[in-house]
Image (cartoon, rainbow, N blue to C red; front, side, top):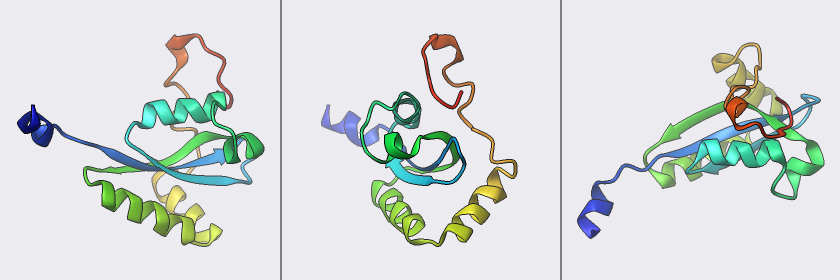
Length: 113
């Protein structure tokens, strides 16, 4: 079993959520992007997401090394807003919600959908 765990692939995601008003940006890191975005959209977690309605996934990247994901998340959090917007625009020029259709078949009430 230990051998299997070493061979198993791991993926870590750093991402940016935008508020429905498009004013606030939330930067996070997770090992399950689909689940974490769902938590943002349904506001399962208290805090920034609920207070600022950060429900639109506008940017994400992934790596197989957790320390790289943590370092990148910290780096992005320290960037000025203009640089964050520039990064998002490079991948997602229209600032569309990249997860807008992820939960369509789940018949659940999600915000920002």
